[in-house]
Length: 297
Image (cartoon, rainbow, N blue to C red; front, top):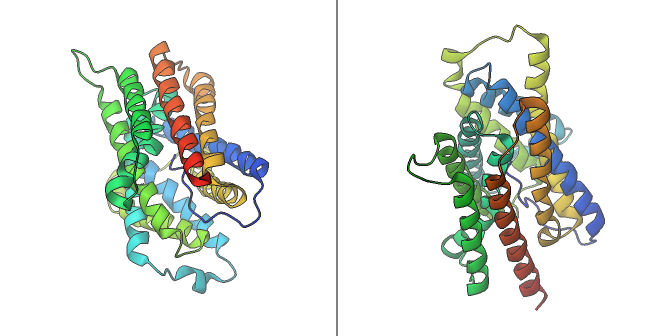
């Protein structure tokens, strides 16, 4: 979840290393999603979300040592707070959605986020989007319609939450494009975890369920660590290579989510999910291809 370019590219590029880091990133983020889905079968939603951010906050604080005080100061705190708030909302919507939706289907719907970024970059970033990239956006939306299949009974509640999560995630990515030029990656990571931990700490006491199974404590800790490690791997990926070269490999998440869904939850998405995901992935790859061509001109 929330896979974005959060740092400026390094001067010395290594595309192979960047792709490798992206594949590792995808594994950790999908592991986070699978852990959350597992815990949500037993524990309240707000508790799972809060633990995800709280453990990540501890991880982020450790990552800022030894120069903690200097790295804590943001040059654009308002943007950091807005970005972190959007990720908190995205996480909440996604965690609610995956409770009733197969993991691979949820992952496929979230693939809409990069496509939505292309569309929303026009009003928010002032970028120009040509007819070819708009065609890619339209194909991506067609893929989403195939996955959720709104019919006589309407769209499922889980799909509605996931579509909303894809939208807020796209806004989160757009703000990340702006904030990345002001602060260090570890500063951004810390703010992200801190805001989520504070926001979701408010409703947690009323719903808190103390884990009685030791293994559940391990999964809770793994949940936060997976998020923190995933973000740091993402940072390494975008430092090693351009976003347009490595971002398409985030679609490998569909493989991991399908494996987790089958072995952990006994889920196998239907043919419509794979067909829709194929269109979304094809649209995303085409948009990335167009961006690379425009950058090389």
